[in-house]
Image (cartoon, rainbow, N blue to C red; front, side):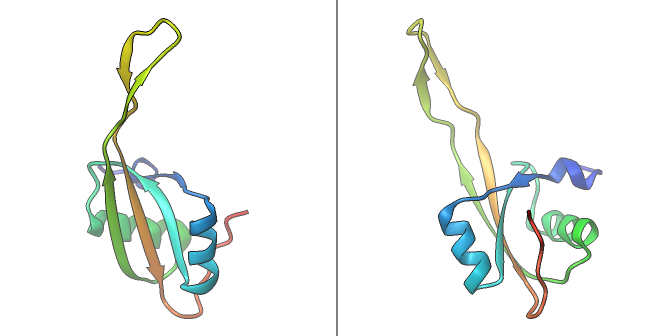
Length: 94
């Protein structure tokens, strides 16, 4: 993983993520499943030029699904990272 854009896939905007960003100065990102916490920290610091205090990660396994043709399939596995920034730092997501 050399490119920072390969590590950080997109921002995970949900109601819970919005509350975390308002109260705890934490931001939620969908990241590559192969990325570790050090790589995520470096990517956020380089892309947004902000100081990262802590990174927490969660792995999610894909679910079994059935399509219209009733053939079984799976959604893809993904990883979520909750990034805590230093006090006074903010990321403008909109």
